[in-house]
Amino acid sequence: MDEKNRPTAEFPAPHMGEPYLLTPGPLTTSYEVKQAMLKDWGSWDGDFRAMTASLCTKLLNIAGDDGTEYDCVPMQGSGTFAVEAMLGSLLGKNSKTLVLVNGAYGKRIAETLRYLGRNHLVIDKGDYMPPRGVEVAAALAEDSEITHVVLVHCETSSGILNPVQEISEIVAAAGRKLLIDSMSAFGALPLDVRDIRYEAMISSANKCIEGVPGFGFIIAHKSELEAAKGNSHSLSLDVHAQWANFKKTGQWRFTPPTHAVAAFMKALEMHEAEGGAPARLARYERNRDVMVAGMRDLGFETLLKDRWLSPIIVTFFNPDHPNFAFGRFYDLMKAKGFIIYPGKLTVVDSFRIGCIGRLDEQVMRNVVAAAKESLEEMNVDSASPPESALKERARLAA
Ligand SMILES: *Cc1c(COP(=O)(O)O)cnc(C)c1O
Image 1 (cartoon, rainbow, N blue to C red):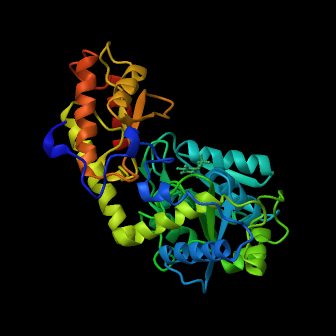
Image 2 (cartoon, rainbow, N blue to C red):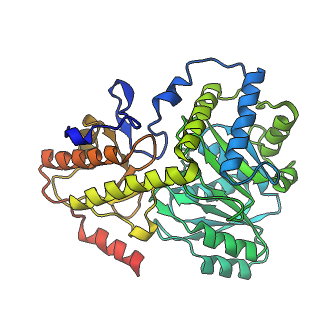
Image 3 (cartoon, protein in one colour):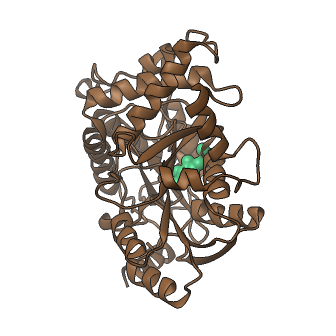
């Protein structure tokens, strides 16, 4: 390794020679976060209850509220469990929901509503076109029965950053309610309730706050939580019941992920010490800029134009070169200490590199160097994508 590219003291290499996870969660966590799990907690105990209460206060603060208007309800399980809990609990039996889809996570929301038997319709923009305010306004004007709109903040399948402020203003102006899947964005991208109006959002422990997997959380207006009573299809995913239990006893209703919560408290402390969401966003943006510039120098092309490139994860087209095979590229990158992510597009072959987790631009320089070496080892002398991929991208520009 180039001497100048040694990991910095603040962002040391993962311990025990583990590879970096350049994935959108689970992701590379700090040593301190992992260390916080070397202790067992009683779920009923006062210390753990205090930890849960503090966790909620800190998350509300990141969302710009002090617990007056909004409340935070943690929910066991992966992020999808929290999404399903929010949808099943906040959408009444007579609701009608407009789902804005531009990738796998938006599709999953529509699929969840189908399971739940909740009335809904979809605007599907394909793999990576952003939903825009005008089309949402038109859909809401046309159908007065629509009560809610659901938006994915950063659609992690392509890495596109959807225009949350624009959609929020349209939904509010039409007098409807907005629910946001901010799983991969909250904690870095702004989602302050004083600037962006929404009724509820969800995120999870193992994304931009840089904790380990185990739970998600719903931040919702208190009036929505009150009104959610009796809506849920599910006992374990009932957000109102979970919220009521926290208020009454300070406890999770069923076994909490104690170690994941302890790790998350450390992660929140480090989030705050770094300078909160703005500082984290700035680091992720530097990670993205250094990585994207380096990959473009090698001849790789991004799926999205700069305007829609999130600082969370970036999609690259696979090179057209006959010697390129993603599986081999993946193995070579892993051998150099970097776990990358396969693509999730339907039309063209692609792969993804995440910018989030306990890593900085120095690490990203090494990612680019590893990609260069890997191409050389595969005898790939050009990383340019096929003509068809570039045509597909031009469609987005149109
Ligand atoms: C990670 C993620 C989820 C949840 O995925 P899980 O695998 O259930 O944790 C949902 N939506 C988005 C946008 C995500 O990035």
